[in-house]
Length: 262
Image (tube, rainbow, N blue to C red; front, side, top):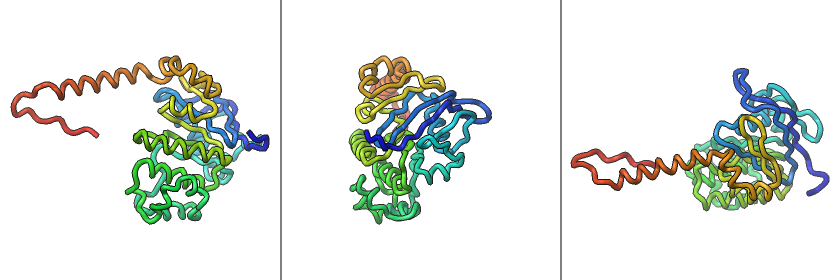
């Protein structure tokens, strides 16, 4: 990694809502050119942390530095310095075309589109008509067109098909290699650790585990069971199995059909 890499540093950060801390005493570092995975069970504080780093919510303590200089508090000022949040809700205007979505942030940035060549054939298409994966590509392209040095990405692949996830991860690796730092909140932890350089596991509002991606991959079973809600996942699979069994069992005559589930 280049010695000239820009560095985003968080020191002792505490954040939350209505005077209640959700994350406490968080310290981390992201350098341009690397991907850092941030994971944890639901409610661990991942989104709160990203929102605080971006300036979307105010911190209750600690500080954020860019190249050793304290960052301004306001979201728009941090964005001008290249700290860009890509929120869980897709950051696009659904009624505008792909090109119009990019013009909103200044221009149709061909450099940003080079990371997502699939979008080039859809410039005149309304964003709401794109596939889920293409919408997320557009979210990333908009962030890059803003001049992102650090992308704070919240659940990029939520609800997407495996093929779309692979495409997005491949594009994200290329984005990082171009000199952008990425702090990625992601539910597909095994896949994300194959992409990331380092990983952080949040539990109870603090960082419980940190290390290189290879180290965390070697401990993935332990991490999933202790920190990522593997028990909850098994319960979800059990409930789905029970639903499947109910659907397979004979129904009484004239019994109403279950509504279709997505």
